[in-house]
Length: 261
Image 1 (cartoon, rainbow, N blue to C red):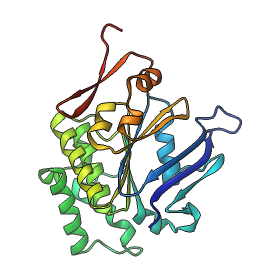
Image 2 (cartoon, rainbow, N blue to C red; image 1 turned 90 degrees about the horizontal axis):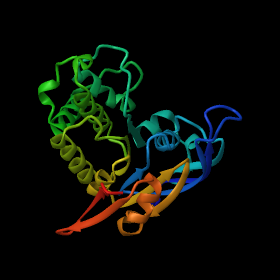
Image 3 (cartoon, rainbow, N blue to C red; image 1 turned 45 degrees about the vertical axis):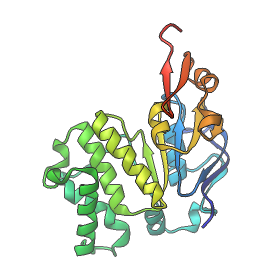
Image 4 (spheres, rainbow, N blue to C red; image 1 turned 60 degrees about the vertical axis):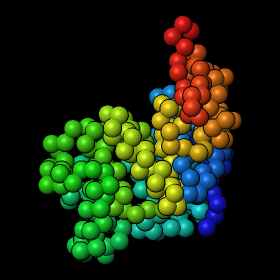
């Protein structure tokens, strides 16, 4: 397996022809079997970058490689088995129950018009258990709270059993208990060999789970590397445009804003 799960090379992108580029000359390597956190203020291109990785968008220039190959080298079925996305927001057109929705994650492994079998049901129930939402199995997705939906979206991608997992603001709308549950789950998945890329505007969420850090602002990569290289007061203060301290307590790094700044 290529040690780079994803490689972006000189990628630029604009949503409209001759429009303002959302991403500009982005080059980035996502290491396999680790957690990479992409940090930056809202509206700086983090979600767009995830969609380019997934192949939902095509670069205006440059290229994105998945395990050393272009998206076109994979069938849609193969790509769905390699990579899954947990979006920050997702419209669900049908009134699925939670279990029915999670079973959709098994679609890449089914033939056309084939119904899920016992193994698919077992995998989906395991995903429910992992997220602590077994009690929601029969509830319509439309009746869920925002936080419950986030857990269900992640369970659906867990059932998909992909090699790469992309998550857009995965702890948004969640209380501290469920934030902790998701971040610990992601750490466990990485230890099992899953490559994980998550976006967040919260440095402390990134620090909790990630080994590799990417700072994005105004469509460009500002800094990339490990915790000590990237998560510094200078880098974060420059990117977020507020005074920020990076503190270490009992071996744990924590980012705090300077209230007097």
